[in-house]
Length: 528
Image (tube, rainbow, N blue to C red; front, side, top):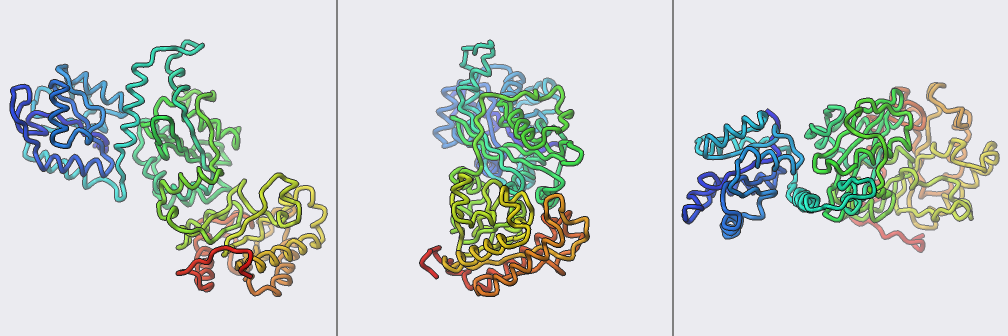
């Protein structure tokens, strides 16, 4: 049996005792009222399909404080089968995910005949409330109310139904969408780790818009997001003038086969064009992606009514993270992880995640940024540091990190000068820094000579760090030589989830040793 996402209630002798049209003073059944509120809180929404006078029914529901517990109510003297068909379509659900409760067997069977996958319950059956409690008990831990989201969908549905003008192409629906002020944001790679539990829930709940028919275990999903050598991943957030829909989609591409591993969206954003927005995001990074699984289901052309918003805008990032990680919104971030694309994995496994800001391109620290005038020349803000820094030096051992300065770092002299400037800056700001040196004992195939990151350069630059850091007690070195082996990494710049979890343990031990767990210090240049 499919999971129930919507319960549709009859009113007379189902939600309440009595028949409104006969002039009865109706009395809601307390146990069912309690169930409705509990289901709403657990993410299963409730609606109404009743043959009654709309105004009288609304007055009765308001009198008992129940009107706001329902979305998309259909109250009219009309056949219920077609009413249910319209209601389910408006809510963008499948009949299989809908439960209809009525005290009239004819209404139940006619609805089932019209919608064979519809789930039904006889309101007069003594087991009905038991079945509803079972549905409630089956909801995942931490499930959240979706009432606000469906209220936004309801308002949009009403406006769409009333919208008549067509745009220049004659498409009234696209003209309506252009007036919705739709915004979308697509966090990339390890920025998605904060959202992994919600992404897993989305994938496992979605059927209509789960285009790859995928299912996941949360830990396996997090490990795949972390494996940025094998997979690219995007989550999709959306909002418009009707409300904020939150996280509504997730996409993952196998970098080797170019196949879609996940391409899943919430039915709440059906027909908004967000799948096409996601395709455009994917093509920016992986233009050779195979979209065959979407053939005949999603046009591959971009849309012009969805405005792309960068996740790297601080206010946007803070809002989206707070939406799914409220603990992070209430905690001062006094730790920064500067390990390029691996930063998010360390933060994900750290017991101090709420205190951490972490790098992910394009918001990242590169060692060249410490040179006077470098950031100004590149049009970037000056680097800012937190009181506690975790810096993976190997990200700066490759040629692309130095741009037009690469010829000057070959012998290590410019590199050494930058290391010294960084250590001085850390000391001046009263900060403390854990420096993680890449392994010198990895197999030959794990180095990246095509990018200048050779074993010889690793040994040279590691030695520079050992020499320069020795003069700064605020700087602690941790060597991956002897700590990481070939099974921990696809290459010396990227690591698998299990290893990053071990490394996060090292980071946590170092943080504890700084004595700042209970009283995070305010960052100040005058603290030295």
